[in-house]
Length: 517
Image: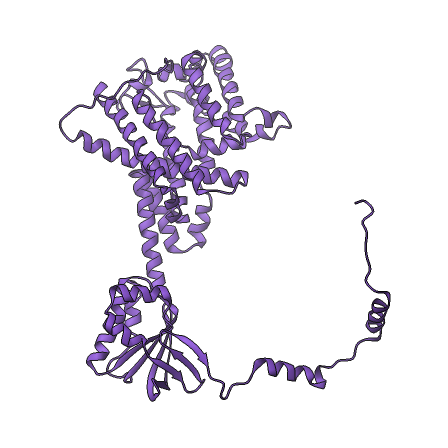
């Protein structure tokens, strides 16, 4: 048992070091890659995990003096047949606690100053020891009967990790998992708190939270203490009870230390069922109920993403669930974006370097990348297309090397058939991608051409600078002046408006003074 605890403490130490490194690298901004569906699935999975962790409150064990020392096989469920009174009283504890937490904050004045969770714990303790035990001679399990709560101030102790086997592999694996889960949950907790308090979120605040959490976990590993991370549900309830500053979380830690070191006797009296009611309220505040709206009216891919992240978070772990949600949403987005590439195709007469010829003019719109290259390539046919292809990339983006390879492949196939593919209106970023990974000589020949549209007298030079020819075009300013001079647009001024204008001109400007000022 001691060796396993040392492994746990070393895991928390390395987890804290990883989180400090993540904060130093400012990786909190990576959270923006998590889609909304992934966040919803994460919150739902977290709520379900918290709910499942409270179910042992409805179990009992007679084999050991403390419930925590019992194995899973030794624990038995409370039933109405064998444990009617204890089960009913446990449910009464849970219901009373949840009702107090729900309605006590609405009590005028008092509800804003006293936390509802504290009131529910006090009421539950009173009901357990005064009414249930003395009045009905029935008891439910308390903290004292579940696990020891008293303790002393921690002492520094470097974890002694056993050698041999794959111990370090397990430590690093779990440390990385906990670091990712803790980092994501802390940033999400900060976002939830910002939404409740209408505070503008900052990436620097997220990195600060991540650094503080990593430092705390690192110190916990050195003082034989259990590490942790931010809890979305508990933080939300804390803010709903009136907390607005970091002092509230600091005081929470201070009071927890006092309870363990000096006031453990009071904590030992708390009924487990009352604590379960508090955490059930955490579950209700954490679960995202808009999930049901999305499942019914949303896209199928969004519904699958939410269910996928939720199920993986519950049955595997939260970090893998988030990773799968990101990958799935990215693939769906890539598939959708690949189908949005469109093109306007026209066969027309154009002047290429002063020579008139028939060309196939392809105006591409959308992003060209690995998912859309097949649709992009299908826009061309070497056998039936004219000898010159004008590829207008004004409204297109060349995203990755797959797009560069697709353009090069089309140009190469047309060149083998003694046909040309010319590029125009290439943006600076797209030009850079084509130049870095493409054939420089071929690219230069494709871009260094003067292209003029005979029908609209628009000349395109080189990479796409557009010049308008004066021949055959009318000056827009001149047209506007001509229209204004027409009698049709010279409407007479109404007599009342004319009188007002004359009065203003005669009186001159009016000065207004504010007497109060």
